[in-house]
Length: 187
Image 1 (cartoon, rainbow, N blue to C red):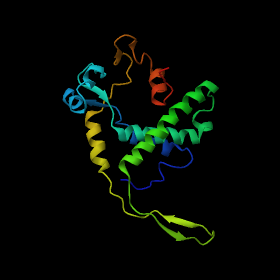
Image 2 (tube, rainbow, N blue to C red):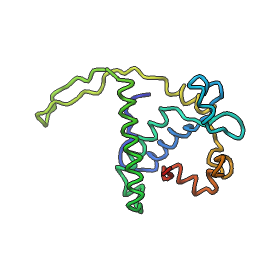
Image 3 (cartoon, rainbow, N blue to C red):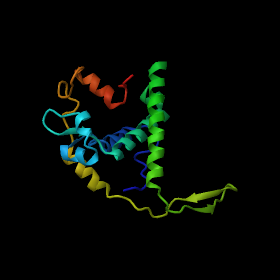
Image 4 (cartoon, helix red, strand yellow):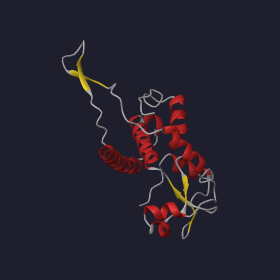
């Protein structure tokens, strides 16, 4: 559901990290050639073919959640990234700039117009927002179930995914972990 959930926000805990892992566990999905054709027929030619059929993709909602997760991690950088070099910090900053613009575009695209009314607080003179307005939400379980049925579970296995010129995408478990935490970049 689209409601606020404290299990995703706040200081780092094992429980919160597990909640984010569960939320994003079906991010990498298998798309069919027909689905790529329906988006844009040229996508098949540039698409990443999977060795056991279909094409690699994700849903925008998962990309947006990935961005929120990485923004959260950057809020607690000393916990999640205690040993980053200045170059690695700059790479993360560039990634997060992309995330901010992606999230901005998504918010503007969907334009939730549920009114937020204001109320007077008891301890400060400024009006406070009442966030209890009803929102029109998608059925998250339906989206997650669709993605679960199409998840590419082997994606990070060494040797599973091969770039046609550059070879194996992940040749070691460490590379897969780096990709999961967003440390891989294309210069």
